[in-house]
Length: 543
Image (cartoon, rainbow, N blue to C red; front, side):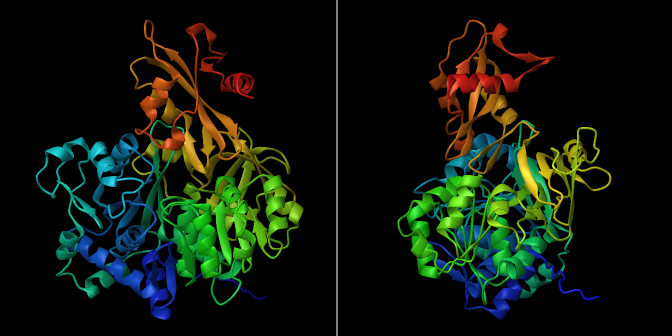
C-alpha cells in the first residue's frame, strides 16, 4: 500500500513567512492600481504586528478590521495572526446597527480601519455612527459603554479624527517592539487556536460569530491550491469578492500558502477585472456567484484575457455553467458547497466528472471531510432523497462566539455541524443543493437572515409585524421583499420604510418592495405566519 497525499498544515502567519522566505520578490497580491511582493506583504504585516504588541495587546486578543480590499486589510489580517491574535474582519457594507453589535459582541480590543480612499465609503463616519460615545472622548485610549472591550481605533491610512489613532502614532507604539518579539508571538500560535471570527447572518436577530481555527482556515485551501487547482509553477488566481467574506478569504489564503499570486480589486468592476486578468495572465478564477460572473462574460475581451485560465470555481444554475464551459473549453469548471461555518468549501467537483455532472451537481466531499444527509428525525436518508446535510471534520467551526445555545443547536455531541441546508446525494456521492431549511435568503452570495431584517423593520414606530421573503432575481439570485402590518392609527408608505433601512443596514438587506397587510390578512400555519403562502402571493403580485 502507498499513500501519495498528506497535509502540510500551518498557522496562517507561518504560511506568509514560508512563502516570503522562498519567493520574496514574487507578487503576492495585485490590485488594479498597486501590488505587493511577498517580502513587502511580510514587512507590512510585521509592522502591524509590532504596533499591536506595542499597544500592550495580549496574545489571543481580538483585532477588528474594517476596510475594503487593499494593503491595509491584508497587512492587518496577517499582522493580527503574526501577533498571535484573533482577526475579526468586519463586513465593509455593514452600517451602524450591525457594526455596533459586532464590535461589542466580538469583544474587539483594537479596531484597524482605513481612510486613505473615501471615494465609495468613509469608514470613519460608519464607526462614529456605530459608537456614538466616540464623539465625547478626547483621547485615543477609549472607554466606551457601547463597546466595553475596545481600547483603540487605528487608521492605517488617512486623517484620524477625534478618538482615532493615526498610522504614525500606531507605528510609534511599535518602535520598541523587535522582529524577534513578533517571531516569538508567531511561534507560540497553535494550529487549533482560533484564528478568525467571521460574522454571518443566521436565524437570529443579529449576526453570529463563527470561530475558525488556523487549521480550519489553512488546511483545505492550501491543499487544494497546491494540488487540485495548480496548473504550473505557481498559479495566478483572481477573486472578485471582498476579503472579509470567506468565499474570497479562503482562496486568498490558499494562494498565499501555495506561494501564488492573487488578483483582486477594491471594488468589483468587470472592465477593470478583465484588464487585471489580462495584464497578469490569470490561471485560476473564483467568481463564486452569477452576480459576479455574468458581467465578466459580457466583456468583449474576456475570452482573450483568460487564454491561460485552467480552473474556475463557481456556484450557479445549469444554464450558466454550460455557457461558461462553452466559453472556456480549456478550463476545468468546478462547482462546490461551502459556508462560513465550514471555513469555505466542504464539497467540490471531482477531476473525472463529465460536463453534465459539473453543471447539475455541487461536487463530492473533499478529502478529510465526512458528510451525512438526514431527515427531520436525524436518520440518514437513502441516495437521491432530500435531507439536511451534516458536516464533520477539520474545517468545521468551533462554535459561535459567546452563544452557547446556538452553538449547541449547530454542533451535536458527535461533532456534526447541522447546516440547515437541504441536499440530495447520489450513489456516487455527488451533492445537489435543494434550498435552505433555515429561513435565509441568499442575496448575491451574501447570507441574509429574514429575522434580522424583520427585527430592524420593527424598530420603526409604525410597524407592528414584518415578514421578509425572497423574490427571485436574475442577477442576485433573490432579493428581500417585506410584508408589513402597521400599528393601529399609523400611516407610513413603502418608500418611508425602505428609507428607514437605507444607510442603517447593509444595502443588500434592504427590502426591494413593501406590501401592507391588515391583521386578518396574514396567512397562518398553526401559530406562525405561513411564509410559503407569502411567497405564493408575491409570485402573483410580482411575477
